[in-house]
Structure formats: C-alpha cells, structure tokens
Length: 302
Image (cartoon, rainbow, N blue to C red; front, top):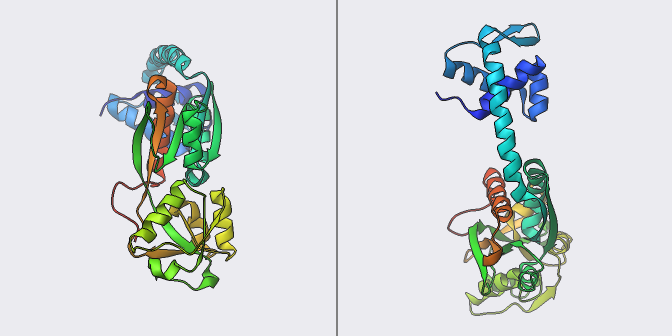
C-alpha cells in the first residue's frame, strides 16, 4: 500500500493537536475517516506512529521523526495550491436550468465555497432557452442547459440524461400509464416556447400525430410543479426535482407510453472563454451529480 497526501495530512494534524476529534474538526472530516487514514499510513510504513493514551494521542519516536518531514511536505503543497488558486479567483457567471438547479445548485454552492474560496460565482436560474439567449449576449461564462439548440462559438459538453416524467396530483386519479390520447384534453402546464419543456411535450404528443388541446404557459419550473400539485393541470418535470413530492404523494409520476425521452444536460461555454475556473466548476458539478445519481447515460423513462 502506498502512502497518500491525505494520510500524511491526517497524521500531521493528529500529532499537532493530540486528538483525532480535533484533527477531524480541523480537516472537516469524520473521526472514523481520520482514524482509517492513520491506520493506512501506519500499514504503508510498517510501523506504528502514535501512542494512544485514553482519549488523547501523541507521536511515538517514529512519529516524531516523521512530523517535521510531513510538515515540510505540507508547506510545499500549500505553496503549490496558492499558486494554482490564482486561476480560480474573481467572478464567474453561471447559468442553471431551473429544474436542474433546484436539486444540484445547493451542494454545488457548498463545494465551490469549500474548494475555491476566492472564486466569486454569480448564479442565474431560469429556463434553458433564456440561458441560451444570455450566452448569446455574453452575459454568462458558463451555463448548464437542458436540450439546448446550440449556437456558433459555444461548446456543448454533454453531461448525461435527466429523467423526465409526466406528473399530476393524486386527486386527478390518472395513470399509472398514460398515452398522448389520454392527456390530449387535459390542461397541461408548461414553460412557454421555445423552452426545452415545451419542446419535449410537443414531441411526445407528436409520436401519436396529435397536439394537446390546452397549454397553460408559466415561465417558472418551480411554479409549474406547484400548480400541478394543486390539481390545476398535468406537467412534464425532472424526476429528481419532484422526488420529495412523489414520496409524500403530493405528486404522482405517470408512466408515459411511449416513454418520455430524457432531457439532455450539457455544460455550455464560449470556445474562446474556456478557462481553468470553468473547467473546475464543470468537474465539481460532475462529481456532485455522480454522488447523487442524478443523470443517466442512455435509455428512457417508462
């Protein structure tokens, strides 16, 4: 087993503070994580490094010989980080499709504050079509879009599929499976065209060669979900966004026949504006999405 920087950092702070608990607080980690890293380091070096006495710990002779060497390593790492962080300083304007933002923006904000404290993100949350207009006008540096149309000079980096489902209030007594003909005469609440939501709805009805008889337009995805829960109509919404309401039966998910295609999520940025900060935000977003199992790679919701 090889030693890692994370193990050395855990050892250093335990040795300095004399406590696994205090080291965990210093590194913003759980105590079992600190203990595991210490054990892994000792295993990698083939020797114990700490004397454990009651609730406290202190380095033994082998540990004392290691502390100063680790301190020098951490000082050099700090210098490297300080130089690198210069690329992640200042404002960055980031746009989020609303349904995507409701689930993903809170953990992303926390992660960016932790990992890039000198970065100053400015967040814009609206429909994908509005974000594309903002990108076209150079009002955004980066945008997370669903089913974008695309424009010259803007790179679209695919992230994955966003499962989307028909949904209704339980009192409407619909489903569990619905076809275009079943919903044709129902009031349908949607973002206005040319939004991704509106395009998805029209494409689904077009599979049966029909159009819905009534579309009520609403610019906010959150309000669409609220109106659907109130029984005003049915809507097509991101599955992850409404999972809490589905769990409480405030909303029910309807299984479309044919299946509703996934929304396709992309990171969009100007080719000439591709900076390390943009790449860092995209990487951070990918990590968060993977941790919450938000996106899928292929197939459709049925």
